[in-house]
Length: 393
Image (cartoon, rainbow, N blue to C red; front, side, top):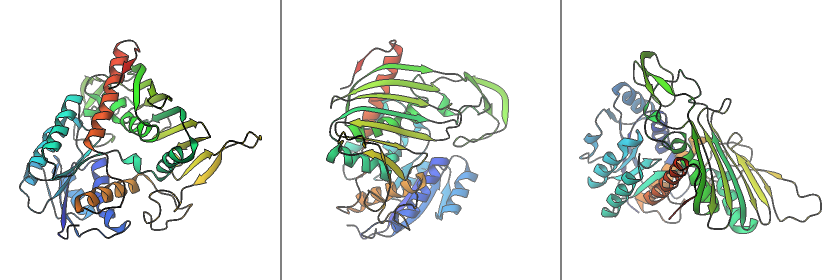
């Protein structure tokens, strides 16, 4: 394990960027053994006021507006890239070439071609750790269900998942990069990427998708007068631009295990701020989880056929992944949220950088990001072909 300080920087200080900033601050307080000393070096954002605020708020030494300043920064070894998808490739490739370890937000890139190029760059720099931010793999309840599938629930027959949000429901939500790009780059790539990753994380690889369908209900949006971040409202100009991608996406899938999957993704679902959920039916039981109640899940174990085979509610606790040592009060009933997951993810990535063995599961690799985009691309091709079945390689 390295004994030198690990210098950390974050590029992008919007909603998710701030979660990365906070996650690195939390990481040294979690789990064992201790990490090397972390140096909180820099926060970079195109908007100087936003970068300055995040750097001050989370205790980073400096802020800037040009990510290129990090390339020759001797005090920076680890960089999170948390900017618009179409910017990922250029930044990530330059950072790897400059000798930095890189954690890139999902989806890995704006296109499958760019994602594959990023994998090639990572393979050309094997001494530097790279990863993609599928943070919901770190949900203790989700990881516990995956363990149950492997250990006792048996072969899965059906995965039914949804990710419903309402951040784009209002036509007054301003135009942003999220609403640009071809079919499949909207709700499917933005939030559906998480659902696709979780489905394969729990059930194994898909072999085909079919029934792809998209709809866009808010067909144009006003350009904001200022800079916007995340899903924030803003003062709007009189200029309106067309929305180029999907508000809603649905599809079905077949898994290599023989299971089938049904998927529903929406960014215009009223009353659903951030509702990721799934039901899983298997040979010897079933499980279900809903992020509206993240620290619990329901399970049926070892069906007996005696009329008492209902679901049991389970509170996530120290017997489940990530809870013991991952919360200040690590026992059932002390809930956690999405912010905690960024701490777990940062901790896992820093363990990889430091060479700590036997710690948390590794961060998803760039190959996983390519796999996710391969499924997204297949769903988009299915939709373009009227729902046709598209095999996955």
